[in-house]
Image 1: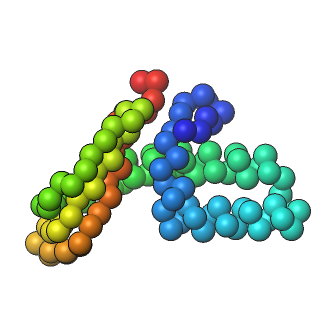
Image 2 (image 1 turned 90 degrees about the horizontal axis):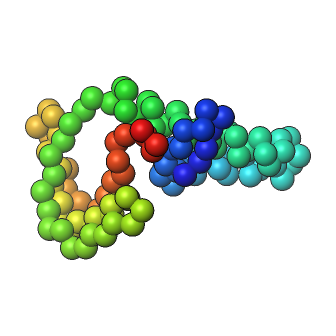
Length: 114
């Protein structure tokens, strides 16, 4: 977890998303070319953690259902991980999407320290 200036902690889960990976690569390049200091990159990533969490919580209203076979699950430090196979997603509009295998990482929806 990262700690922004207001001392609230946010999960770093979205850093492994495609946008988080792209941001990390860009910041690494900026550091290697001496455009920014490493401390600035750390602050940017902390800001990214906060913004992603807040925006997903506040703006995403879509729902879906999924069915599949739960193969494994575990909980460590209040973070649940599920591996599900033969998955069928049913979207709000009725569209269906299939996947052979997915990994779900679930955290408490309340901010840590609330």
